[in-house]
Structures are given as structure tokens and as C-alpha cells.
Image 1 (tube, rainbow, N blue to C red):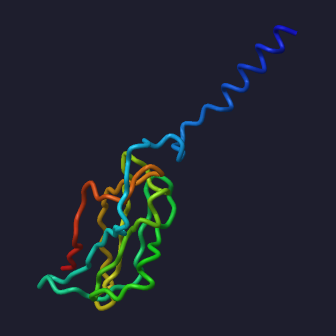
Image 2 (image 1 turned 45 degrees about the horizontal axis):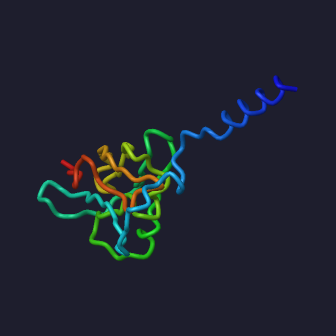
Length: 140
């Protein structure tokens, strides 16, 4: 009986260990504001003018999942500007940062360009934040 109790205790401890961040793991003293953060990228020509592109994609290199911003469907942006991630994506990003590969094709030349940006989030983060990477992708 003692061995069974010890086994059940050990099993319970192992099951309760979860490496993924949960809301209960978040610091109690963190206060988030009501702002909504977005991280964008712009495709431009050699004259630094925004251009429309085709075949836009944003892929999280850690998960291999396609990243879609909920804001991009509702916000009217300038030509060639895309919202890569926003706070709606926050919980799907790691706290240490995920690399997002952004690609697009110039419909006039069929040239495809890509850039990688590193963004962080996590369940305990108030907002998505950009760690590194380009703000613009320039076509020749």
C-alpha cells in the first residue's frame, strides 16, 4: 500500500509538471493596458514606394504554421503593407521570440523576396513585440 501511494504521488507530480506557460504562471503584479499592438512589414520598389504584391505568406519557423493577422482583414493599409502579427496572435508566440518568414511576389516581375522578423508574445505577455528584423522588403 505504501508503494502504491508513493507511485500515485510521483505520477501526480509528473502529470502536473507542464513546461508550457499558463495564465496561473503569470506574475500577479503585471497590469496590461487596453492598447492593441500590431507588427507590420511593407513591400517597396527600388524608389521606396509601396507596391501591391501577390502570394503573401508569413510562416512561423518554430511551428511551421502560417501566421494570419485578424487585423489585416479589417484595416485599410497602404499599398504593400501587411500586418504580420497582432495581439490576437500573442498566445501562439513564444516568450523568447519566434522567427516569422515573410514572403511576397512582385506581380509585374514575378520576383519573390523574403525577410525574417523575430517577434515575441506568450500567454503572460501583454502585447506582441518585435525583437529584430526588417520593416521593409525592397524589390529590385
